[in-house]
Length: 181
Image 1 (cartoon, rainbow, N blue to C red):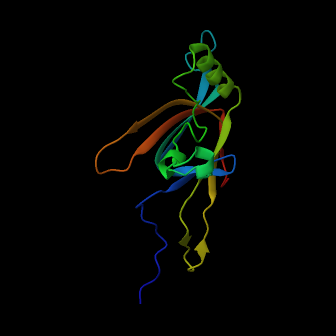
Image 2: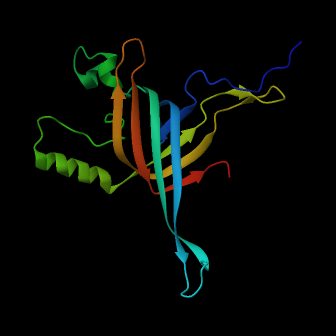
Image 3: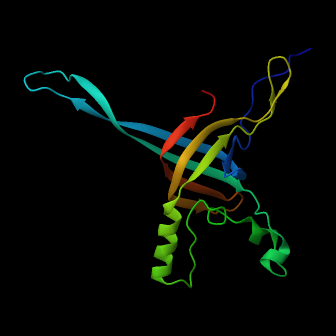
């Protein structure tokens, strides 16, 4: 009789992206870079630096969504005959990037973007798998990281026949908090 496996196979989403307590979507690729800017302390007449001091921290995030979660709305909210596709939305509908409107003036669009950037948002990266530990006990999904003060820098997507439509969102953030620490 074989032992139950505690290893997970990566065959689908391996992260949930959560904003303000709501699941935004399922992701296969979440890349977070935390870079510390440092300054060397040099002294005239000495070849080696005396110290290295931190002067800043930069956090950037890239998320490859495989599916955005449907918006919580009804057909009545969207008008008669609205389809589920109209309710699903992408990065704009989820509030991950500023809203754009083709009939808005340049002044209105500029105000929309600057208002959006006044307050950032926090994202929680959650392990999406429920799996069994070595004793066979189910281990629930767990929050792994919190990315604080996110501001979007770009979004991209590709539509290719025979594949899922994915949305890639890049963000800059104020700091990264490791929830397991």
